[in-house]
Length: 329
Image (tube, rainbow, N blue to C red):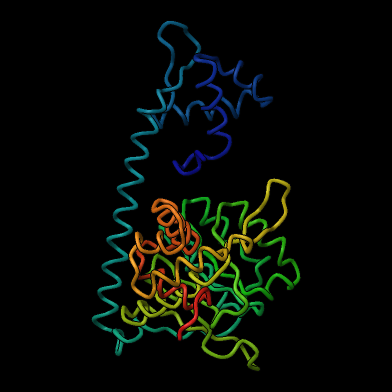
């Protein structure tokens, strides 16, 4: 981790020992680390040059580590400044590109990526560049990256990026499908399953989308579109949310088994409550009609909304029709 501050492994090791011991001579450090005195002396001199260590005034011949909050804090501020300058440089180059490239505005909105390596590279970039969330529709047939080869996903999750994934049921039958799903759930990702997804799709922070340009079983090299156009992105997010609402949550049990919440479906009374509400009856009227308590009706409606992942009763009505909980007459 100290490599972030420009310290190699040897310098970092000596500094850590000094932090832990409080004060030590070069010989003591060499003995503790199992190294020759000469290289350790050079390392201590390097730490002193960087302001990370200094001779102990009370104990001649020994060195003390500079307080990490002060010494490394200064280096951290320097790195933050460098990062800010790098961000400004990227922004400047982006503006220059947009000014000078013919048709740049269009290419900024839609990019066509062709070939296994290029698609894989953009696929990784999308995840590693995400700051908040990734939304994905996953099919059985990969475009260029098999789930077992997706090394960017756990890295993004470790950085705090949340994942919501809708998985096509047949994807579980693909080689390693159950293993990939178990690992995703173990990382805290939210996964739902549907019989069929309309297309493979990746969305990063709702600002960039990636989807196949041709049918997944089409001959030739794979190709994908990377889209940044606002209107199209809104449509892609809407598509994802629509499929997500229809999916069954899948979870990992304490024993490591995969299980869907298919059992958590509306019972006969729930369906009666829904049907009466959809014809315009109030909660009070529904309670009287079904000989239930008012709070019982309200609890059942709240449970149905939680089950569907919804926040309003209007959404629940639409969802009830889409999921076949009630039928139109």
